[in-house]
Length: 231
Image (cartoon, rainbow, N blue to C red; front, side, top):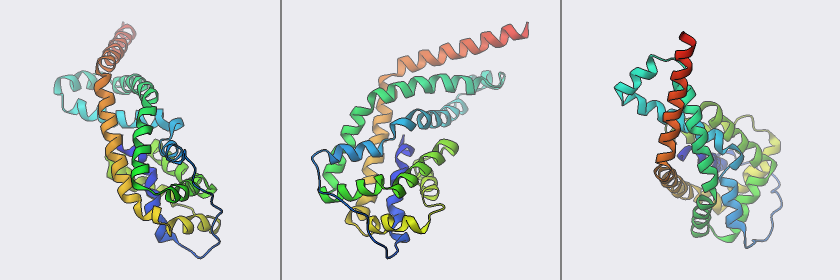
């Protein structure tokens, strides 16, 4: 689950892209800013796709560690993709239902690490046209390519986020890059990634029985279909 939040690391790239431009308008802090920022950090619309990618990578690793199970999958090309898709959809459903809990945890981290004005600065950047574009590119890169680790996801997200920037993007990047919020983002990211990892592990534990049932049902369906086609 760590890669879900790699897009947040665009903050770390901001200082290296600073140019002297007019800063975008900001606003006064509001009571709901921590929750609002947590909502921006967790891309609910993209959650199913990101979870599916993460699950498929983990699923492949688990098969590799189970020679007997891997032999069955190897003997049935296409079975791994079929089962992974079915189970990842179940996992995504549980994850979306559990998002409020994760957002509460992330909001608590934000309140703990950032001052009210720093939350505003981060929200202002994330919601600016430049911030929206950068976050979208980071998320799209993760959806398309995935990542084997949180570190790989971070690198991939940053590279995608800062690609094809134009002069029109510099004011928002400069303003945020010069803020104390940008300087704090590395620590915030570390805590967010740890919290999301713990949440993801707990999610799998809480729904282990349902996920096992979904996997077994998908395996049985695939093998039955393959057997029928072979007749």
